[in-house]
Image (cartoon, rainbow, N blue to C red; front, top):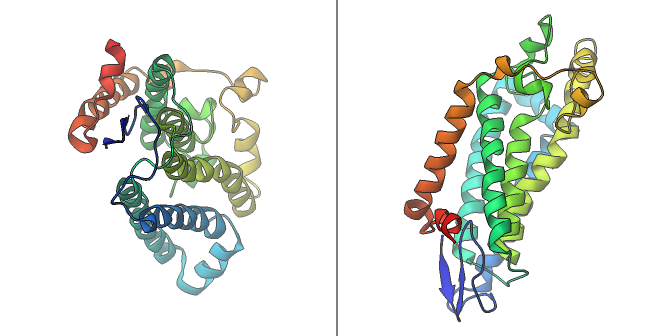
Length: 262
C-alpha cells in the first residue's frame, strides 16, 4: 500500500522517500490503536494460548480436532484484522529511512525465505500440523529440515525483518514486529510442546536438527543433501518470489521492482 502526504511517500515494501512520517490528517488515532490491539491479540493467541498450558486446558474441554479448527479460524481472522488495521493506520511516524541498497538486499533475502516456505509445505515436517508421523521414519530430518527444523517460521521471520527495515515506520514496526515475535518465540515454544508430547521420539529428531539454520550441519550432527530438496522447489520459489513482487502494484499500489532499477 502506498501512502503519500506532507512530502513523504512510504511504500508497503519500500522506504520513505523524503520528509517525516506522522499520523496523516483524517486518520483518527483509533486506527493506530486498533493496529496495536491487533498486534497484541495476534501475539497473545499464538504465544499466550498455543504455546502455554492454556492450550492443553482448552483441548481437554473441546478436543484436539475442534481446537485446531478454531485456532486456524482465529489465526486467519486475526491476520485479517492486523493487515486491515495496518492499512487503515497508514505510515505512522518515520523512524528511519533505509538506503536503497539495503532494501534491494532485503528483497533478495526474501528469495530464500520463499524457498523455506515452499519446502515447509511440501516436505514431511514433524513440527507441522499432523506431521508427527515423520518422527517414526528411519531418518526423520531430511531436505530442508537438515538446515533448520522450523523452515516455515524462519520464512515468516525473514519476511518480517525485511519489511521492518524497509518500511522504517512505527506502524510498520508494530505490524511486522508482531509476526516476527510470534515466529521467533514460536520456535522454542514448539520444541517444548513436541518434546512433552513425544518424549521418546522427539529427542532423536532434535539431536539431528537445529533451530538456527545450518548449526546442526556445522556441528556435524547432520549434512546437507541437496537432492532431497531437488531443483523443482528452488525454481518454484523463484517463480513465486517474482509473482509476489509483480502482484504488489495491484494488491498494495507499490512497485518494489523499481528498486532494482535505481
